[in-house]
Image (cartoon, rainbow, N blue to C red):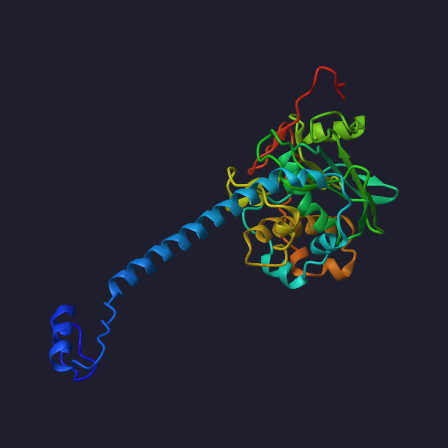
Length: 334
């Protein structure tokens, strides 16, 4: 409602205020007051907010799409690169507090105890691994293996790897033991990556090792892990979905840094699976080294109960999952 700036009288319209000025304040210049525009301003504000929100949503969608694409596509350029020291430290430097809190972990299959002639190499207990670069289940197990084996020795020349781009759980971030070195005063580690990421032959499985594998798993599943011929692991100890967004098979794969950054967080699903598996491997290895090194083997995370079972016979399948390595027409049957 317009008001006279001279006398303060209110009027129903601008025209009435103008008539008032001419009759009451004839010597004053009439300047029409600005009409209220609160409704118009509110409309403008709403429009601006909608535009800003729409732009933000579009940006987030763009970032998400490009993040997913980067993790699957651009990360392939890192395949074969040496593992950065900071990444290796994430695996080898997990605190005792975290490992103790996690214990046997969550969703973890423990190594199976077996009886047989001790597996040794160079007068030291041997840990034998048979896998392949393409294998998504090997991809998962290597994380736990590196953590566990780092408690007894040191790796060098480890390389970054992604599992097959066309297999289940494609492009899972992992490592390859091919061309790597491992030194330890307590154990000997023998690693065989039988095929590369594309399924091409990489390393031949020695007859003796193939016979040992078939003794405990006639299906020749991978990964296969024999710990001094006292414990065996057939198939991954935890689900490969742990390495993916949302812990689902359809989720985009995490990259190496994303996984490693969670390993020292005892509340992380990733840590509960990977560290828990590593703890069971550490416990098994401590049993074949006579409890050495004592600084590791006296820790509670290295004393996880592993049931003593009869020697396995026939095909053995991990309760989690395993992958059967097909015999190719051009591949010698060992």
